[in-house]
Amino acid sequence: MLWEMKRSQKPKNMNSTEISYLNKNHICSLEGNAFVGLSNLKYLNLSHNNLLWKDSFAPGVFAPLINLENINLKCNRFDTFDGLEKELKLMRLEGLFITPSNYTNSYSFGEGFRKIHLKSLYLSSTPECNCYLKEKDNNSFRNLLHIEKLYVRDCHIASITEDALKPLNKTLQVLDISGNSYLTFKGMNKVLSGLINSTSLKELYVNRIHVPYNLGIEITSDDLKSLNTLHSLEKLFMDLNTIEVFNETILYPNVIFPPSLKLLTLAGNRLTLGKYVDYLYMARNLTTLDIFRQYFGFDPFMFRHHDVLPHITSETPPAVVCDEKINQLMSEKNQWTISTGDIFVILFCRKCLYPPPKSNT
Image (cartoon, rainbow, N blue to C red; front, side, top):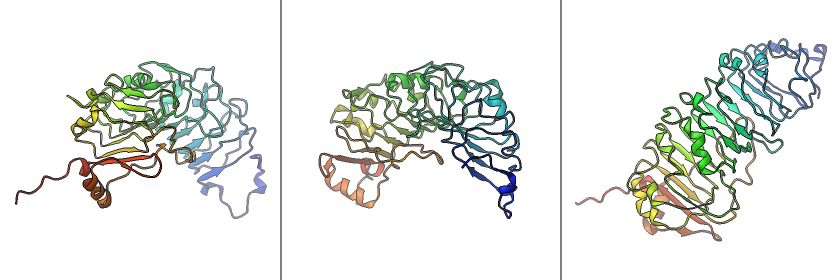
């Protein structure tokens, strides 16, 4: 259905000023009056069309959308973001969904974005179109002063400068860099360098940042050295990273994870028994540790669907919380238990790891 719909075709009982959500497909171009009369529109979905920036966008096409809060431009062709701020200078805009589509180009957000109070930026790949952010430098995000949530999952990131995320140090609350398998944990540290001593970051997703079918790895304190500086980090997702063992220095004599961390997921790795197990008790602030399904070749997310709105902030199901039944199971067996096949299911929770002291009476 093309957007070039004449105003006379509008249903008689429909008041355009009352429309808050609009979704159109197969659009090749947007004329200047395309959104006239939609002053109360909150969410505009233009994803999966045939739009080419800048050729398909008439100047000022979004100007009537004075109350727009979220715009989805994913799966169109954006070879550059140059000039995008001139069309998106909307007072209420908080969420931008967009897909960088040229692997050889360097993407950045112009100075005009300083005046846009953008809080959420969704650049991640979808099953239909890939995100290409091969390199990120110090200019990439320097004009995004209000970003609270940044998603760059599966964006083919090969290199990033240490200060690339520094402009987001005081505002960023959720960061997802999952699926960038060329980063590794060494690259993760570079990503986090700009967020050192951040008091705002609460959720970090670093799933699949290692090549999934490579040799298993040992995690050392150097691999996670940036984590301890994230003073407000509460949730850390490290699934599907071919981790086999943690070096004991991760937990002893000092825990490398910040004291604020409550939830840690390590699902779909290759964890084996090691000396680090003796020091798990040192992570006293953890309330949930998910190390579900540890065996070769397992991908717990292969059947998950990619959603565009709302954006999936994790590629793993919600962490399992201990209930009375699990507590009873762990207190009785107090060991790893084997479920069907070769799947090892281990559920550690605060109540399981730290049972209340027995009464002397």
